[in-house]
Length: 206
Image (cartoon, rainbow, N blue to C red; front, side, top):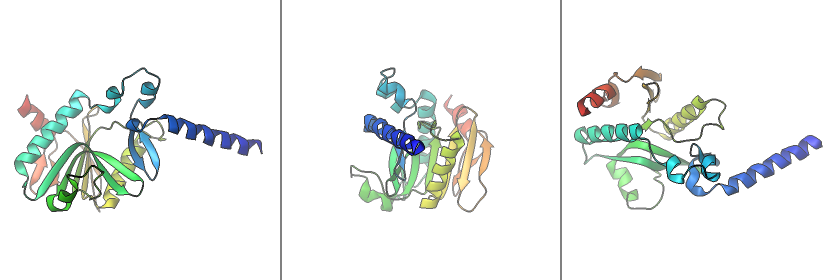
C-alpha cells in the first residue's frame, strides 16, 4: 500500500510540474509525451531568459543558412518547397516535431503554407542540425535521435540527415537501407543528383 501511495504522489507531482511549464518551453510532443527545450528548468528558475533556450547558436544557424542557400540554388523551386527554422510537422495524433530543414513536394504542402497550424503533410527529406531538445528524460541521448529519426521514416520521410557539430559527424538514415555515420567531408546524398559536402560549403563561404 505504501508503494502505491508513493507512486500516486510522484504521478501527482509530475502533473503539477507539467502544468507549471509554459507552452513556450515545449519543444516537441511524441505520443502525448512532452519534450521541453534544453535548459527549460533554468528559465523557470529565472536563471535564463526564454530566448536563450529557444534560439539557435551561431554555428547551427550558419550551417542551416549554408545548406538552405545551396539547396535553393540546385532544387527545382516549381516542384519542391524548402522550409526551415523549426518547422512544426504533425506526424501522428498528439505528436509533432520541429524540423530544421525540410523539403516537400510543393503541390502537396502548398495548401498549408498560409495556415497558422502545424503542417500535416510528410516531407520528402529532413535535415537536422543538433537539437534544442532537453535530453535528460531519456536513458541515453541517442534514444531521442533514434526515435525521432524512426518516427519520421515511419511517417514516410524518404531520408533523415542529422548533422552533429560537436563531433563533426553526419548521420544518414534512409528507408530500407543501413543507416550511415560519416564525416563532414563526405558527399552526403540528399536527393537524386544532389549532394552536400559540409566541409566544402564551409570552405567556400570562408
